[in-house]
Amino acid sequence: MTSNAMFEGVFCPSITIMNADGTIDYDNWGKHLDHLVDAGVDGVLLFGSIGEFYAIDVKTKAEAARFAVSKVAGRMKVLVGVGDTNLNNVKALAAESEAAGVDALLAVSPYYFGPSPDCAKRYFSAVAKATTLPVILYNFPARTGNDLTPELVAELAGENPNIAGIKDTVDTISHTRKVIAAVRKVNPSFSVLSGFDEYYIVNRISGGNGVLSGLTNVEPETFVKLHRAWEAGDHAAVVEAAERVSYLMRLYDTADLFISAIKGAVKAKGLPIDTSVHEPAVQLTDEQYRTIRAILDK
Image (cartoon, rainbow, N blue to C red):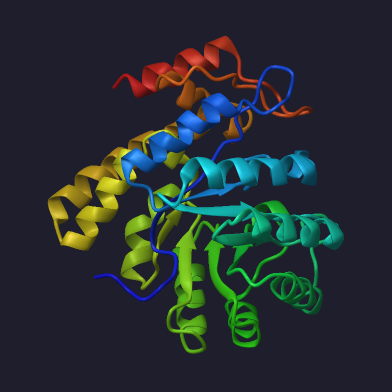
C-alpha cells in the first residue's frame, strides 16, 4: 500500500524544548529526537506551529537545524519550517537549512496579511526558487486567515517541480480529498499529509500519505503502530491504535494553548523538560499538568 511519494507515514512537528530562560535545551531536545527515531517516526519538523516558529529568530533556527541534522544522522527525515511574514527571513533560513543538510522545507502562508491567491502564488513560488530542496506547503487557514485551495495547490505544484507536498491542517477531510484529486493530476507523487492527529485513516482512504501532527510528540509509538498496521492491512490493529489517538485528543483541551498541552504531556511521559512557551502565551498551570497526567495514566 506504499506509494512513490517522497513523504509518507508519520511525521512529528517537534516541540521546541527550552530552558526556563528561553534558550534551547539541546540535551533534552536531543533525547526527544532519539525517542522519535526509536519509535519509528519517518521524519521530524522543526519550527512548525507547535515548534513556536513565530517567536524564534532566524539565527537560533539555523543553529537548531544544524543540531538536528547532526543528532538525527540520517535516521529519519529532518524538515525545517521557514515560514515568516518577511520573505527575506524565509530565504535566509532556507539557505541556512539547505547548507545544514536538512531534507526539506515547510512554508506556511504569510499569516498576518491573509494573502490573495495571486500573492500566495508569488510567495510560495519565491520560496521554491530560493532552494533546491523539496518544499512542503503548510495550509492552516484557522491561523493564517487564508486557505490554499485545491486549484492553487495544483497550480503551484505544476509550476514549481520542487513543491513536493502539503500539510493540510483543515478540519474537514473533504478539503484534503479535493487537494489530492487536483494535485495528483499534475504530480502523481505529490505528498498530502493531514495536520490533525485523528485524520490518519481518512487521509489514507482518500489517497493521502499520512499525518504531520502534534500528538506524535507524546506517543509516537501509537502513530507508528497505526501506520504500520495500515500498510499491513491489519484492520484490528488499525482500529486499536486509532481509538488510542482519539482518546489522546482530549489532551488539547487541557491548556489555554495547545503547545503547552503537548509540552506538558511530553513531560508527563518522563522527559524532564521545562513546559514554558514564549510569552505572551499563558503558561501551563500545576492543575492543568495534573489533568494531563491523569489522562495519560489511563
